[in-house]
Image (cartoon, rainbow, N blue to C red; front, side):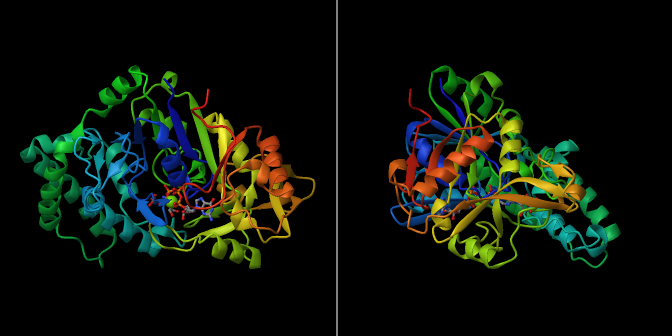
Length: 437
Ligand code: GDP
Ligand code: IMO
Ligand code: MG
């Protein structure tokens, strides 16, 4: 048995999709365990780009079954769209895709509420979260309030209808009380389209907990695919500028029903620099020409919303905290090639609080107010100023690129086993394969 979890170590978009696609060549099942279609996971194979929001990224390896675990919040319309798009390319998911009967449903009124709240100047008091507007937060709120709709509710459509209208009515009346000017969505339209699409999805619904345990008991390999990243975690992220699920290792367990004993490796993915979409503190953010270069060369635009990603230097304190929180057994570093033209590369090793040289902070703090006051202190390493795109052997990297990898490894105290040198599946250096003996 060798099951591995792949988790983002920053604020999402670290390149998890590419790595999941790469590693699922050797697995039998891949499972999403949290988040929803706020995720945008990009895969490039043979010059063709695919972006998945709900579909696990192992879809191009037919040796894998695809599981959407109980911790995911699912917009059935988006999932059905992804199933159809894949079917048009000849990938049939019948008997291969399994949706947890306990997974919660995002309806279009959840997305409407998400958007209304983000636009509301009084509610947000000028401090928007910058959500994807896809209803993720409101759906998880319903889950915690114990009023959410789950896929198993579709087994009794009468009861489901009653729950839907009751829940939607409660939400919309509270929204209406505060935001008198917003046009509310039509519930009958939402329910009838929800019912139609959910009935199409019912053949894929099952008890995925049972399924995953059976697979693992057979000695087959399961890959758990994280969405978002460590610092968007609802408990450990830069609250309130976070998503509404646990993106750290705990979410992988609760979101699938797998136990600690079943996870052999926890692999953290990070870029060689840092990005963030949406609002919130970002100590190493660069609002200068280097930030612009990273944005342009890294094509740093959100895969879900198309927003520009904010860019900055790598924050080693973040990676150290990601390792601590998740018990990382190894790391994957992506987008080395984006740094190719730089004369110098900086990595943040600690901070000064409020610019005071006597107030040194070595750890990534959890307090947003302190985070906003930090001045990063950098270690500067020489660049290599030669192309690394597509390099597949560590020995072929320029000396300074190798030194950067080794320095990050040394500071984070976690081995870097994979280095990504381009978006394509093949643009990868595998120093030690997670499934090697
Ligand atoms: P995810 O959400 O963590 O799966 O990451 P995204 O797909 O949102 O964003 C990562 C972006 O970087 C995608 O456009 C990938 O195709 C791209 N990417 C991944 N690895 C590399 C790499 O090593 N080099 C370059 N240039 N692009 C990469
Ligand atoms: P992947 O899986 C980057 C961000 C949003 C916003 C915050 C809350 O592709 O790495 P939400 O809609 O979740 O309530 O928004 O979280 N966010 C992401 N940023 N990558 C993601 O997913 C994200 N999913 C959510 O931009 O700041
Ligand atoms: Mg993404």
